[in-house]
Length: 577
Image (tube, rainbow, N blue to C red; front, top):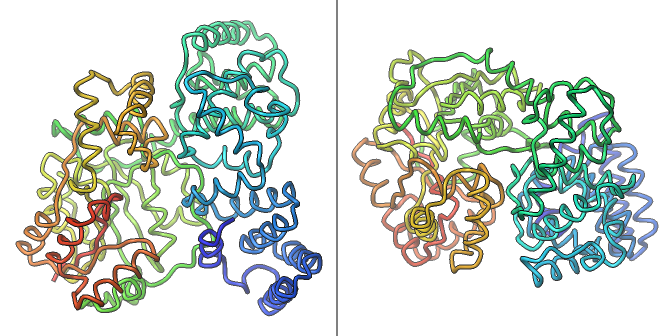
């Protein structure tokens, strides 16, 4: 993988001394491997890395470094397997998909060729033989590709078009699906479920799928035998949980790859339905906007993620903020017992789980409007964290009646979906202890100019928040200047695209709006939060100009000159003084 990914791996790897292997031995093996590399003794370096991963099989960094070494030697297949293992051990490597895609093309050159061919021919779906020299078999068992398909939506239009075309090839020739192609079909079925079937479909596909669906439903109802390949191909187009008597699929024996699909699309859905009954309900939800927002997220829980980050070394909140904002004048919490945290609008749990992993000694209450989202969050919470996170259904607008008070409140990507974001912010401030910290994420009007235009495009053309309409809207937008939306990962799955372009309630703000509220409430602005590289860049830029990074007027000047600065949201910290 590229240098950025390797740095991420090093930064987030478990401590060298963790696990069964003594830390000094691990470091010795790593140093030996690196020394061999520096001396261009690549075979010796590879042997050292193999010994390292054999003794410490959870070391993502070692797999990554071994993969890079093998790739340099031209051993693409072995390198792909190592990178796939690194991605499994450290799913956050997927966050840099551009680098990951570059790595995939290097270990699997046919996929790069197919991307160029599929893009040039679109909207025609090329047959497998024209996409790939050697057909699907040329890529079907590549470890890194299969791992990527099971990890998250792929935020790359050309790769999406390859997968869309190959899906049609498999549907067209379902009777010819062999063992190798079956494994690929199952991986693609899992991928389509993850992106919620956002790939476009032709009328010919829809007709074939309807025939296949009817055939499988009839066979299931009569307790007949279902061909595994047919079920896998159907699952590339239709979530199996939507079939009548889908629960009967969970009772049958399937080949391992097909059984994974049944677990993903049927068994886990059954589990979430049971979990809904266990979730506490703290407040009524009777505000009109809140009810409409809840309805959206009951239909499309957001975001649908697969694997939580791994190998994250927790730190104290005070140290985390001091590292981010070394010159900010905030007061440390300085707590010796557990820190009470409210995650207000936790969605499917990504933020709550990430906060629990990131900070030492936190105890979290995570609330959301949507029971479907909360059930997803509860199912996906790693067992090691379940005792530290409580989930409950609640409306932020009604949380003022809650008797608890919190040391920290996190509400990222939430308040801009209220009719009045500042009313919700005031309610949350009432739940924050004096000296407490708050992390917020709010949409920037300047950064989302193309999103605002796209929402007008959606309204003008009468698209609806249905899967089929979202598919058509995406394809139409790709033929306009609003293709710029592909910079958002949200563009590449149905629920996230609905959140991006079809949300029932959305406000976009500016830094002057934030400044006025922060000043009016007597809050201390600590700073905007970016990734590590961007954080260092802005600190250096402000220092060179003699500015303070807590000066919101200066930040407004920066954003006015570079509107993309906050394309991911205004993510920032404040303190209640």
